[in-house]
Length: 419
Image (cartoon, rainbow, N blue to C red; front, side, top):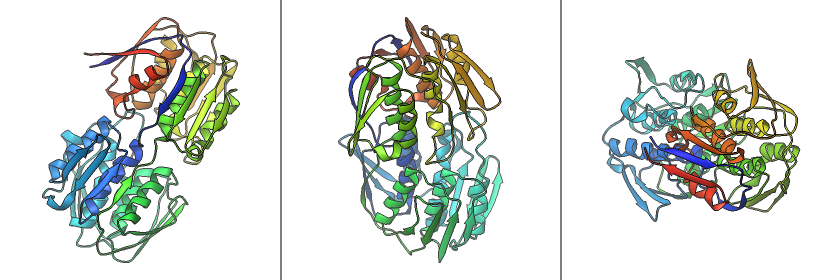
């Protein structure tokens, strides 16, 4: 397995271009199964999760062609299989997103129970109960969700908890259902809105995306389209924290500042000077050490769970003490022990990480345990004295495009070591 070697202590200075959002690309690729014609997607990031999804769709019979590195043509007209097998989806929980589209368009789907990062329980109950309410017959056996339906029917669906993938799956299924579907307590994330916009561009009738109630009026078919994926807000936040943790200056381009409100508020609280335009944000610490912040994760538009680990690293070298409370996943502090190996004064009490900032972290060999934890260890390595080697970086390759190249553009001393 590849590793990242980081020689820390350099103040980052420069600008970086933000890639298309992983968490928007994956559901949009799944939604392409609903179309009767080819779709063209632009700003598709080069990520392991995207590669896995492409392999999955190709196995089903979908014709996929890459153009110019960032354009993807997806032609679902040749689909012959309706199975998402375990061997392809065991590393990626987003695989369940093909369940709704396959069932809605083809009346059948056999989808392996998903894998992904080991950060807590992610039950499929909301997906299953919602599709059953729309008329599907579903059995869970031998590790697969086996779903059948002649044609789904519109229904009123009240989600017990706010769930992004459940909202997306049910919204996709509803586009070809008979009648109207109302999804209440829906997720409001920008990626949900991006998926809805993509579906509308194919001819879907959707209102309310971005609010807690989404109305979908089913149509008979969806057409081809050309669509640009929105910028990745988590990658955006990660590079801004990289600037803050090193006392540097970082400008991110091709981003959506309005999607970063909660993150920018905490960076401002940490002492960063922030300026921004329509599609860029610049952070300048002017060599100062950041101040520790308190935060609590919650569904959008509150502070994102996917930025929690990065702020744990920031708090580790900040002035003062900070408390970070995780409310989304119960097992998302696995990076804490690795940060402690680097000298962080950090303790976990229940679902809260309490950190007393130290003046300096020390480089050490560390191991990534999940996608965002791996990002936090890279950030800690940037700020540490000496050399940090981050192992098991296949996690980070699932969600960050060319991270070592982008950090090198900002002045980091970082390189990939082949296995």
